[in-house]
Image (cartoon, rainbow, N blue to C red; front, side, top):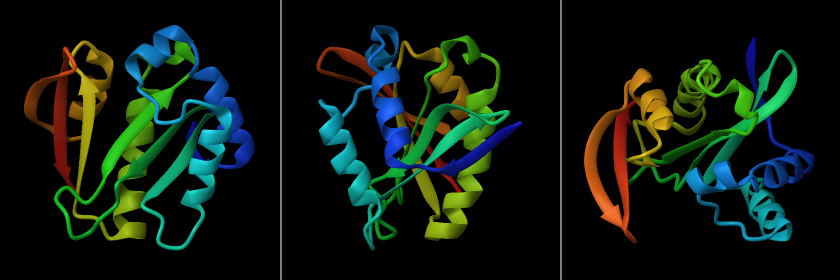
Length: 157
């Protein structure tokens, strides 16, 4: 069973270490270069008016990844951006992330009064693109940035 739970500083520590894996970090750019950066970013999510909201993804009670929205701005289109990562690689391709996204979208729609959400992925990251498509995201743009082919998806909530 997939459950989404609030993030804690301990989750941030685990997530930071697990996503240092070369295969994961190649597909998941990170704004946090150090654990201290990651913890500072997490602390900002706890402040009133924070522009991001994250949850941990648990499978049968075991922490296996994170999902979050960022750039929250009800006045903009899209109202926020989505990101996700399952760091337990043996779970890739088993529907865990698709189920987490399916649970997360209604949560943020209700909690944040969002009407739309966007998501970027590298074009070569076919599983992430599939997760987005399975959850009703439509491909809006294909582009190259810094020599990397990327995709931009969007969904109305």
